[in-house]
Image (cartoon, rainbow, N blue to C red; front, side, top):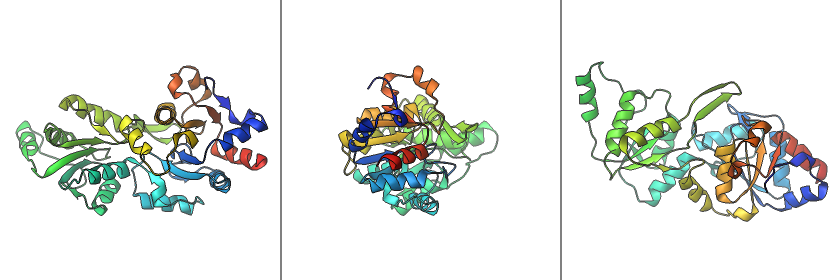
Length: 304
């Protein structure tokens, strides 16, 4: 489909054809169903309507800011039926990757506490304590600090951390210059959105720094990277020809769904506007768009 269609304006027979074309929904979270974990009005009803039509729903997000169990509980409290295993994020993907490789060594992590806790609960050992690693403000002290090396570290995982320091990055660099140490990275987000007008730089910049300095390319287990595409393809009951992806970002969601061969629905509650569609690569164009998940719910209720 070359020109995205406004789902709310298509004829009834085409709408029925659209709904009948998928069994499973993979849905982004930030900017689609919530902002700062506050669920948008109408989203719980939309999710319930989709399920009443026999659609299964899983949530594919780069957000690893909390344990998946806590993530599910927060959605449940706001009226969305959701279980821990419905949530697919980089944390889950990296843990699965390490377990599949029978990994038994330690991991050096640049991440928030939630990511570290989920690793530890999965039986993976963490090499470094959480928080800013500091040294005295002179070159001698800095060099002494980065000389510290734990030979039992077998992987470095880079996400983002509000308290990350230059020392953290250089310790990670020292480990990944060893080719026997796995280099794993989360979603390639350039911005972390807190509200429509407030954002900060995302983990993509830290991944790029370490990639450039080390000369190594990480295994990227987050949207929209190919390693994560393969991970999603291997999820149970993932049939690209019968799957709808709902997202709010052109590159992270629509481009990712294109690689998977999913039908693509863009919602306009994030940072993408209709104007953005005029200048984006065709691989990132959605098949359909709609103003919001709430509007999708109303459309389905009125027609089915």
